[in-house]
Image (cartoon, rainbow, N blue to C red; front, top):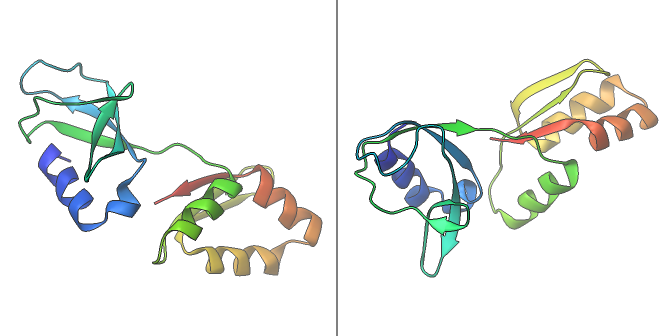
Length: 134
């Protein structure tokens, strides 16, 4: 994904893009290192790319990035969902319970898990799984 495409997504879906991480895979101006990871952060009046807490500047718009998906806790999922007005897609992975649900809303995930697991199993899955916010 090119820098200009990331900015376009930020403009269209700012709440969903906030906090996402992207790794630089192709540089244009040699101002940044391939492999650097940038985070979408909030500045007064706009969102932008940061690295180590500092705003990234001197981008052409044609650098290439790939999204870095890191697991979050179920508590973090609930926090993010409580701050957003629309449905967000989630994925959940738990190897112990053989759970691998991709790109579903929370209500669908909870319904699916509750049909297959008891209260104890469900609680363990919710607390110990790797959650991904799409």
